[in-house]
Length: 183
Image (tube, rainbow, N blue to C red):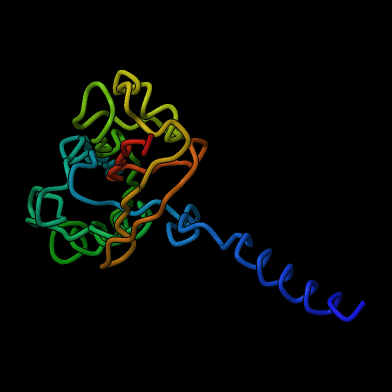
């Protein structure tokens, strides 16, 4: 009976080592409005001016090269904020009370590498998961870890990374790395 408390302490310490921690996927946010970045193609509608209503690609500097006003920075903006910036630029000596709408025409691609059959960049489809991305890239190699992947995502001005399960949603611009299994 004297050993019972000692055994209880040893068992609790042993089981403490089995406790799980929060997975690193919690570092990668999946909420919030979509933010424009390099590679996105947007459809701009300027009501009353069909010549300006076209599709534009966000360039490497994070701007749209817009006729009359030049480059308008949109990186990190929602489509609503981008429309406001374009309207302000047009109102600055070119149009009176411009009514501008911006919507996504084509998302920037996602990237996938590691233990998959076809590494590279692929077109993003809204609602895509890690599992769908792996399928798009031709599936796994024989040595792939088939239970999880690592996702790198830009959040604001920093790049975050997290180990995620296969049903984790990906976003345009994400980089997915499928790692090799250990055995």
